[in-house]
Image 1 (cartoon, one colour):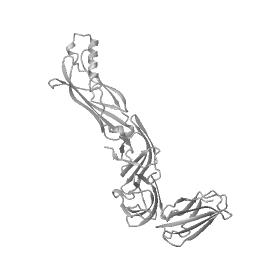
Image 2 (cartoon, one colour):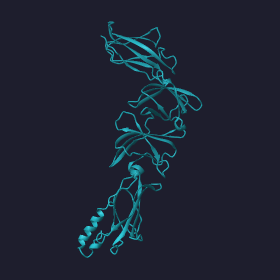
Image 3 (cartoon, helix red, strand yellow):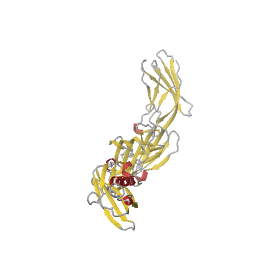
Image 4 (cartoon, one colour):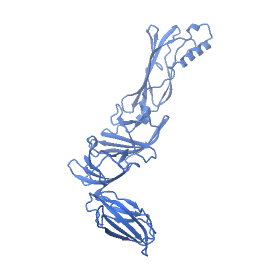
Length: 432
């Protein structure tokens, strides 16, 4: 401020750190500062810092920008207007506008004009300073700062991506994921970002990207800390490609037939034991990419390639814990596990029959006393699963005996054998 007349000498501004969203970049600010007479005539187009209309910064931070002095002590009233626009320029990209301030043109009456020659210069300076500092134009915020909430997912490395999906949940959560939309950064092909506005805290995220042919390009796990003060990202690339549960939907990428390695273009999903088969086509025509409405329980998935070849898989799904396991039927486990039986048991007598049948069959397992391990029964080996692509319902009764022939445990269960991952059953009743 000049002590004899009202005149802004410049601006103090604070620029955010854009590197989390844009990587290494320049921050370019264009200024437009003008003075007008009361009748609208332009007095001067101001420049900043010695004649420039543009300033280049290599990082975020606090800066002071000086205006060229115009010397307006001879004007009792003038109009003062200023604007600035903030751009980001990634290392090898074009300018990206991320926000602006535009105060247009507004009148300022020189507060010291009427007092010229009547008060000391020090008092004149105080009046001038108080006037401008009390102005609503003194403290403003750049609007539409997209970079302040943007999470940069790639740096021109996904040029061939046809689909980029980002799922998130609070760090440490075992619940279902939510989905965060992604988009290509303007002027930056292959660079994807996600807007984290409204999210605050630390999140576990999964990034999955595929090309138009269904090839999985990226399968990354991210830990993202996002707060108003800043944030950090930790990335683990190339994690195991697994199903992702978002609410009641299971997302699959790169689903292929084990028999020939071809990506599936459609599938038939059936909740076991008696759900209605549902045909689902690949999302957006991208082979191997599927969104399947699911519920907790076992399911059968028949994957179908473009030539009509089929492969049967089994799935065990828990939407509450956001977990799902898939196996090809050809390698699926058909073992029934008996747990929590007495360590004194040396014989397990199992009676079983197909649900609704009248005839019981018997299987006896034996082992030495003192073992605390589970009892395992291979139902496939004993003929309970004649067709590996199908599931079979059985009623089971069992009695456990010690070496003296005394019953130490017994129980009943209903099981599904075959096209499921296999079950774990605990005796519903214990006798000694």
